[in-house]
Image 1 (cartoon, rainbow, N blue to C red):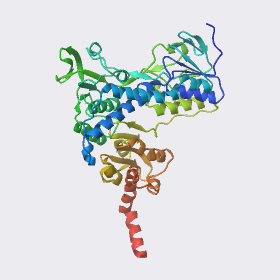
Image 2: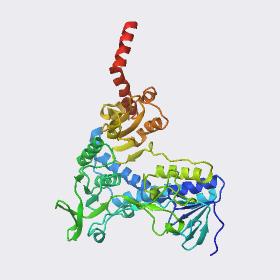
Image 3: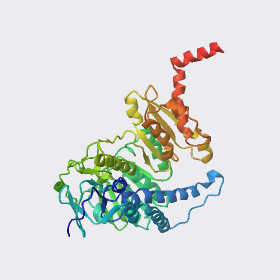
Length: 471
């Protein structure tokens, strides 16, 4: 087949980064196209954000039914079929899917092609079943896939990951989860709340290694109180099949019998079949290497999203794609800065984070101000008083970072993210009127601790004496 008309911008991959790049290019008036191997929407729609949050919602309702006595209601064991929960998830996913409908993008002016792509040169890709497409600029946005460790017997025994889990309709009675990061903990809690006996095995000595140790320990205690077993400092060395199911053998000699294994040991950029060397695109540590402007080693090729191996979040992929558009199509250069990127672990309660951790901030001379949510009126009446708001700031009240453990922490973190991004101080949060009673008041209460400590210092003592004298 002869080469198609040359594109000004062609995205390889139909996840968030690829879709934002292609749609943005069309909006800006350039000839824009996208090549996707299977279906538009990427990990977020099909195997990540949308389906996982759907079953998290079902599990939360099941837990609330069992916990109804705390609210003066009669508790009830939820009667459900796991297949119905998964059917609801797929139905919800189908509703969200229209945002990524190929027709919608074609109506925007984006040419949508399906098939596996491989680079022929820095100006051409060959698409399976279609032929060759030429472009002045490319955006590599092929995402990432689950990574399974090379444990002897694991592949032979079989396992689930965050791709295959959403294709099953059967909840095993006993589940062994490998990895205590966000995905492992979120799905461990879901499966436990829906009726499975769950054991999480983690090599490190703590869960959520990117979070403050205090926050991680608090969440661990909450998960264990729900009946989840968490084994820390253990490594699975072998998996074998027996008549009683799958058996995990750890480095300390313990043996764990399970009916299914859920692997949550990380994700790796998806580069298979792209033949990036033909385009002069450098790969480092298994990811496409980019500079601060998201440009690869080939001057007319950019990359965005999980394939670059950085923070693997949908909102980061979107921001990177916007940077690509500015840098590829407009004069000048726009760099990506990650200091103000928030992230959320969607356990119940949630963990939300932005900026430096408490330990990092204090090592740089910062101070952490905390407010326990069990003392917040709205949290008390809603029965969600478990958790804490922590905000770290320098001596002038400039925000260095924050972590929230609590219900709706992903929403509660946003005033802090906004303040940090735009250089506001803790006093700006304190002087802002928050509605009462709300959970977000917890953010203001933590910020108010900064002012209280200032009043307890030398300056505050002088102020009190002046006020006393004037009175």
